Length: 70
Image 1: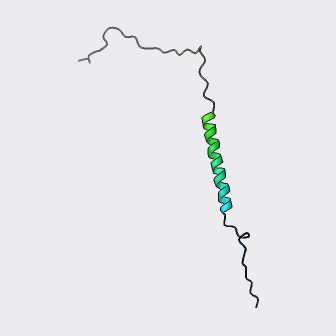
Image 2: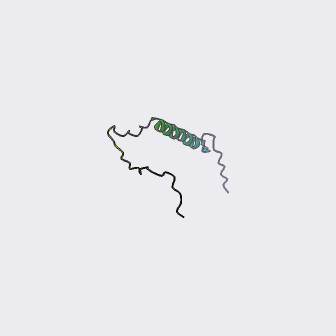
Image 3: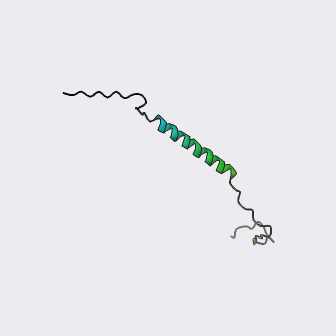
């Protein structure tokens, strides 16, 4: 009968903490890049100075407070 004992050294065992550290660093980098983009994006172009907006308003004249018909 053969008995195999596997006692890994601490350098051989991985608990995933390095993966979490990389994930946190990437997440922080994405947040910083998004904040930079949000604060430094270009503003919308202003309309040109020669733009006309034509609006037709109803004429006011005579009785401005009409009474209901009886």
